[in-house]
Image (tube, rainbow, N blue to C red; front, top):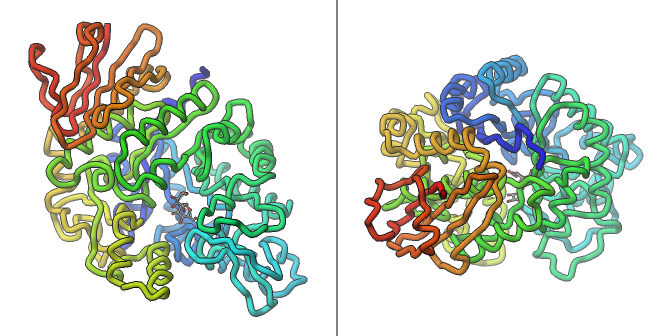
Length: 537
Ligand code: TEU
């Protein structure tokens, strides 16, 4: 397998609006990211992924772009951006940016022109039809919005304020490629490509037999031609790294996007866990990992993540965010950093931040949640029941401000934070984590350092054992002479672990563990969320 820098990298995701506010407007900003770069660097990560900070009316937190070549005033200015890039590089790290090109904002000048008349030169930059079909969008009951001015419907995969671009128009593609070059020429190190497999649309927009399954939005004919063209025109001319956000994908399809000889993308996020596994499901998780390993290993590179700005924090969703918060955070970290693929750390994950439950819908900001709430309440359902049902997976769960210390607003902002803080910031914060040698932070730091020193964590084969065990997840990683056993008890129960004799007699040394070392003679009774890695002779 070809070795490359990005396969060996760990990415830290910065949701800047919730990271650190330096001007007191209640939003984090790029200057705030600059001021916290030493903190990020101290974790040992290689790449910073910055969520969208382009000109935007901000109805979907920057994923609705009205000016691709400017910086949103909330985030700062182009000058601050240039400084950020320089400072990231000065610390030996790389910076990747979000690329959101499936759709723009409805306030983008292209769309304002496009909707103004049927014969406007930009009409064909978007998708207009006389009739709508029965498809749902991610955030609304229909993918089609009627526009009075010209009496036609436009297509949107997300909110009505996010019209989809018409990628079949070569002019649109050229505009996007030129915008990508603008950022790459500044020296950024790559892109995280938002829903990139949605660019190609189904010919004729046929009705669906099951409109609730919105997978018709992605992986349509033409998508690989667009990505190969993008690679040819733009990506291949730079030494960069790309990760595609690719919902509705099997490992077989995945290889088509990231196969090493395909000339498309480097890596992908699939959503078999984050979109389809509301709670921890051991059997399912093991099955997903095995299928993706079998389908992709040696052909294309995967990613590992259990949360991000769209998905509830991992200790709350999959672990235990009260009694075993620290143990479960470390246990999942051990897993994420030892499974095949690039590990992503979402800001705050490294101190074991938890999800929130706010008291009322008014406390939430997210358009996905608010739209869904309105839609369900409009059907006559009890508002309280609707609200309760949406909380567990609400996107704002992971968007609350970063908890830096126990002071006012957790040290995040002097002003009124754009989203309420998690009230537990007095106990869970960076200052506390840095003062405690046993903290989640130092455990992440250790795992990341291990990755730098041990190629087995990156390039090792993956071989699961105990495949049907309901609590234990264990696997070997092997690279050359190096063989590791990763042993995880992903449960709140003490769980006996009977390793085969030929393995237990060969456990040579403990590489890392999240509980104190046990005596060699002690029975292998794994504690709740116990995690350890052994080197095997
Ligand atoms: O997300 C796409 C999306 O809908 C995810 O929430 C989903 O979990 C997965 O990606 C696909 O099934 C991206 C951004 O991350 C999100 O914040 C934006 O709202 C959305 O695109 C629209 O740009």
